[in-house]
Image (cartoon, rainbow, N blue to C red; front, side):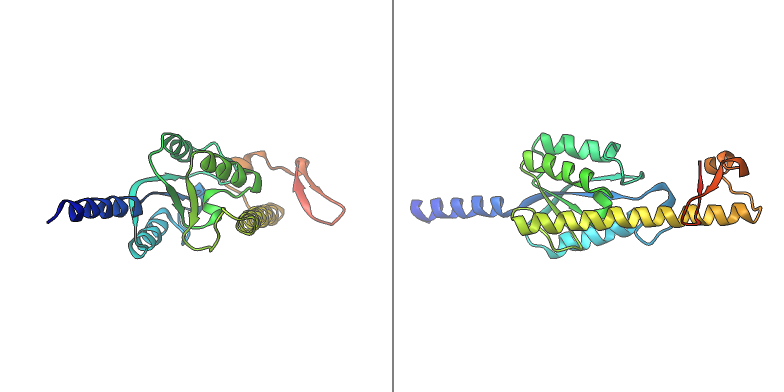
Length: 195
């Protein structure tokens, strides 16, 4: 092998190394989602399949939380952002936007932090990228839908609690201990709410 061939081979190897993208995965469930179809294990399976079928991705870490997506102060997310700040990976892969955040503001804060650290976000199930104005808009819309879905879910849960309460059924947990006829009110839309 000539010196010229050796140099070009070395450059090709470096190109191959650069072609690898260090990826970490992020998974999240709320504590009330323990038995839901998007469990941590189901998300991990989907993310592993995505990585396996996408050339150049090399998994270097995994972070997860079992907390609500409406707040951004979560231990797994904090560790992920700290690792991003340390330059430990190039891409964060999550199953769906609502797994990263259920708040538009929270989602945008996370994206801004990742961008500042040179890390790209990627959803395994939603086709968007944040490098173009249209991609950013799509990401914001998906985050808006995630927030909307959370709010609707909370409304339904509260309606269910109210219906059980009005039937005289006892609710378990912290909410039930705070609910009594004295703090149950009806608004101008004939909906019950708890003070």
